[in-house]
Image 1 (cartoon, rainbow, N blue to C red):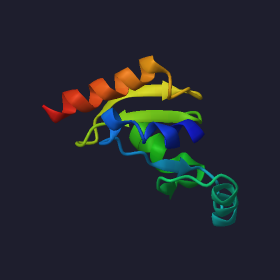
Image 2 (tube, one colour; image 1 turned 120 degrees about the vertical axis):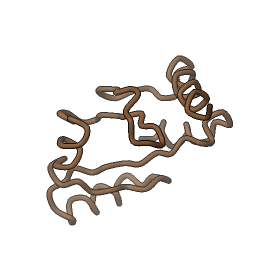
Image 3 (tube, helix red, strand yellow; image 1 turned 90 degrees about the vertical axis):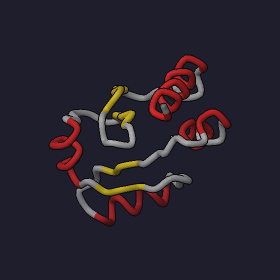
Length: 101
């Protein structure tokens, strides 16, 4: 989560929108997590990943989906990632550039 916050500050990724999803089953658990791990991007709730499983076939967390403006998944990342690695930043930059065309 910390690298996602830092990732947003990269000039080439200014169009990148990050949304977090909490899978906690109760609002209190979700609020406790958000309070303990504050972030600068919106956090949505999906108790038990019901929507994520149905819409995006999510089966584990963490899971990161690269979704274009039309809701089409172009890349799925399983597990934790070091988003500040140059290779991952390049993939994200290319995604944004390709979608802008």
